[in-house]
Amino acid sequence: MHLYENQKLKIYNSLTSQKEDFIPILEGNVGMYVCGPTVYSNVHLGNCRTFISFDLVYRYLKHLGYKVRYVRNITDVGHMVDDADEGEDKIAKKARLEQIEPMEVVQRYTVDFHQILSMFNNLEPNIEPTATGHIIEQIEIIKDILDNGFAYEINGSVYFDVVKFNQAHTYGKLSGRNIEEMIANTRDLDGQSDKKNPQDFALWKKAEPQHIMRWPSPWGDGFPGWHLECTAMSTKYLGKTFDIHGGGMDLKFPHHECEIAQNEACTGHAPVNYWMHANMLTLNGKKMAKSTGNNILPRELFSGENAVLSKAFSPSVTRFFILQAHYRSILDFSDEAILASEKGFQRLMEAVRALKTLPTQNATSNFNIANWRQTCYDAMNDDFNSPILIATIFEAVKYINSVKDGKETISSTDLELLTTSLHNFIFDVLGLKDEQETSNANITKLDSVMNMLIEMRNEARANKNWALSDEIRDKLLDVGIQLKDGKDGTTFTLN
Image (cartoon, rainbow, N blue to C red; front, side, top):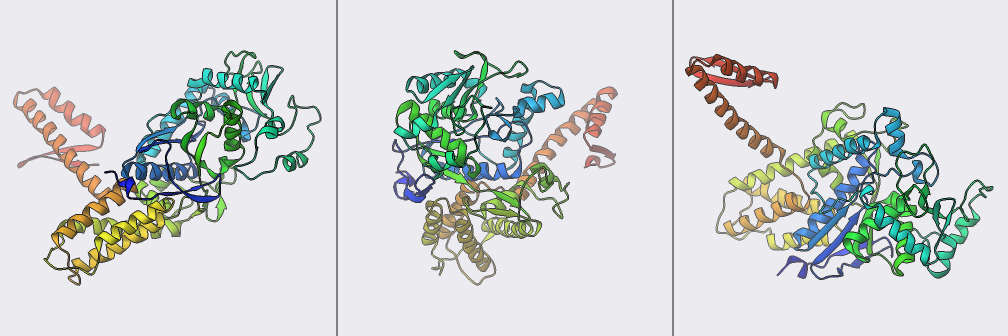
């Protein structure tokens, strides 16, 4: 029996603005798509919050026993500046500024994205498709939308006809926008655009002669519209209708609204059953923005090399801080707030370590661990409410400290259940890491490797192979490890 059979999960659906019972299309299986980054710069902390939020969702679904196919794309075509149909391609702009190939930009920042999420202990998605790898699929969708009469081609570009679509369907159902009001409030473009209507969006854009990233199509050389990429990749790997589509709140309009319209124009039905949106991260009460300097990158946070915080904070402490707020609420990042989180995180890890040495007795405790465990599930079943889960976990921390101080008792059976439950929720579901334990494990590994190298060097010296002996010593010194030969043997220190 799987846990999901006994745990009734509710998800807040952005499409209906209410919590709904989660019922997957195929029992025991979940298809989840999350909009990934446009890789033209280092991933910022606000993006990381979104990906950590959906990592929590992924982890909990897996914990419940669902077989999850998690798809998260990489946008490497480089949609337009300000996510509009006009302007300069973000990736091409960066390539021009740095005088490198666009795919060098893509490679550099894709690697950075993966490294940062790995530091945050995010699980990798099952499939990570790229927009450039799915040009053919995008062209095929455009053909279907044209055949169904919801798009038009003009001067080598193809645009989605929002007004015509709205006559047969509803454009604006996710964001709650009224198409007539949108049209009325949009200024006339005075013939500066090929669009029939300002609300129409590009499915395919004609590439000007100077545009580097371009592909052949039935309408001439060009590149796909930003919204189309996710439609093609999500439906290819999850089917025409799938369970969950996630992303940041800023993507609700126009990106996700356009995704719904494209799918309905192509297949005649809605693509997603549950739309989920993670809210924004602010810094000292203001929106994070590179232009104003009110911004901090993850590496600057981990190293302490920034003008915002009083010290460096580890990835696990940062992750803990992020999960102390519900994914749908705005979270303000400040020195004071993360310092408080660090103290809480340390208390939590000390309690987990204390489990190994707690004395057990054959006595009934006042703390009902089975009930407490279900309260943890209740929190996560209520739209992945991580702050309530963390508060519930701290009830167990208080109990552990009472047992340690001799004020409470715990039986061996209860200790086993408590240990398993805490490890499940802290490490498997919340995805936190005990950095002290990790550090100790790394020290043990380093000791083993160093003992082997010292043995090899001693053997080289015994054989009068001074060149190899010196090489081992010098190579270690290059990476900050100094060997010291004494009467009791060879030891090492880290410089």
